[in-house]
Length: 122
Image 1 (cartoon, one colour):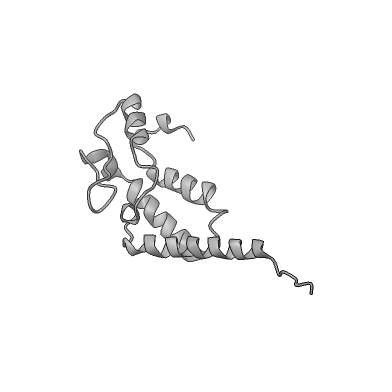
Image 2 (cartoon, rainbow, N blue to C red; image 1 turned 45 degrees about the vertical axis):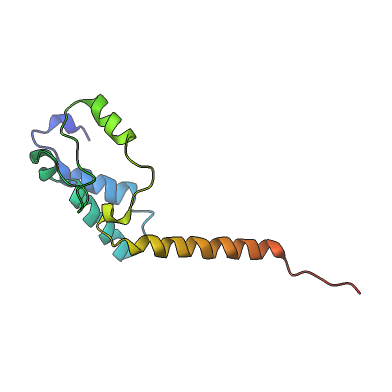
């Protein structure tokens, strides 16, 4: 796809490429796929270009930078935190608690697997 050949930004095509082509094969649950496409629609639309500071999160902490400079975009992206909070994706903050509990359970289960069955020799 050659974006520069279009008069308007082909957001629908970009959303399709990112959602279906890039992630589509990895997201097997239909509800997860719908969620992914909904999130992409929030980030890939005309308002991103029209609004001065398009909000990417409800709290306004994440916005699209008001610049046309490639270098400034890279600088902005590199300045983003490496871990995103659930609010960025429109989810409740308790999602983090659920994720952390699942990770803790996996860790404990992994540790228990290394323990083995043990045998006692008298």
